[in-house]
Image (cartoon, rainbow, N blue to C red; front, side, top):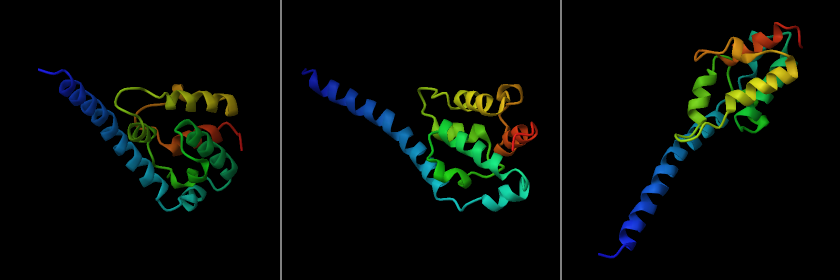
Length: 135
């Protein structure tokens, strides 16, 4: 029996195994980008800290590889863990949460790891940063 059909089948399975989850992540990213702006929700939550909100969301977008022009498509109640699941492939951890934590520590002097859990929302992160008086 020739070996090439087995190799061709293996290549097809490998491609499908990598592309199918990628489609899910692409759809998730597109859904975020197509959301209506949540600027009003952020202003209602943090009326005196919008510069901080903008900076935190920019850092968040950078960590999760979203263009910063989509930062206000994220809502205060978006869970970081949900965004992580929606953007991370099945094989490799892309270290988005770690990048986020390092950037928050560098920019604001806060340690995300001290208060981070699966229910941590973007609201929680902004409140942590704004609570330090960094507006």
